[in-house]
Length: 341
Image 1 (cartoon, helix red, strand yellow):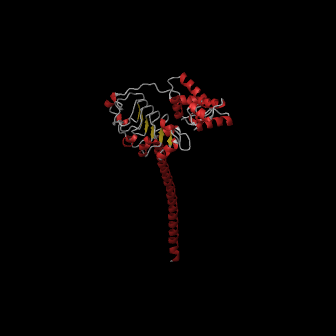
Image 2 (cartoon, one colour; image 1 turned 45 degrees about the horizontal axis):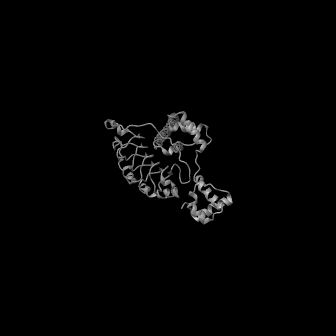
Image 3 (cartoon, one colour; image 1 turned 90 degrees about the horizontal axis):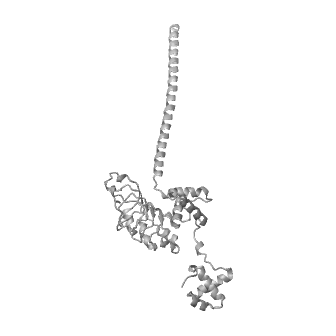
């Protein structure tokens, strides 16, 4: 038996047509395979509001890129098939009334069926490179994995902070190496259905996790993410778990450390692009501010030194005047002594 909200417009029309043809509620329900309650409700809605279409598609948060926006974005992509996500976003915002972020552009393109076609090879030469410990970002999208392993990806990347493994055929994250400094992990468009408990052990400092387009179906599969204390952004776009009732409320309740879910916070405010980046700029700015403060302090000290120097010079002049006055008084006394005698 289907629920009213699950009915297609065609099925609603059949119910209304059968009732209009003179069939009773029980006869219509038996003929079409729906419950008597469903038949009664659909026909009542048609009588009251002349409504035979479901409003389910219009529920939820309003999409920033509507049908016209998708047509505009498709023209941009067709004009330059090699355009990057940032270039597409900038070109879209140049003529759009409402600007969008790069994250929204990436999701819209995914909905439209676009993905990166730039093949990347797993470099076996990494093992022979002496500077792997200096690599901070690594993008291996569209590589082929062998039993959940990416050849060449190992724990030698000790300073890696960003790793992208989009569409590499992963079915599990159990074979990922231990990367203690990794902050952002992209795992979208794979076939992962669970086994997320190893992430807390191998990636303890993870702050951003993208699992869009995977096979996650239940909220319970996300429970191991509670151990990731630093996790503040999680993407589950195009996963079956997003179709559950009260999906967002359940995830935010399960993961209280989370700030953004699918690019939006609890109050449906979109995350800025800077929230999706590894926070290095803030540290550099903090260091620069610290240097400036030190410089200011030195400047203040120098000014105080100059002021104190001026005081010493003034005191020196006063001392000379006092000495001359003393000598003059002593001379007058000596002149007066013979007269007194």
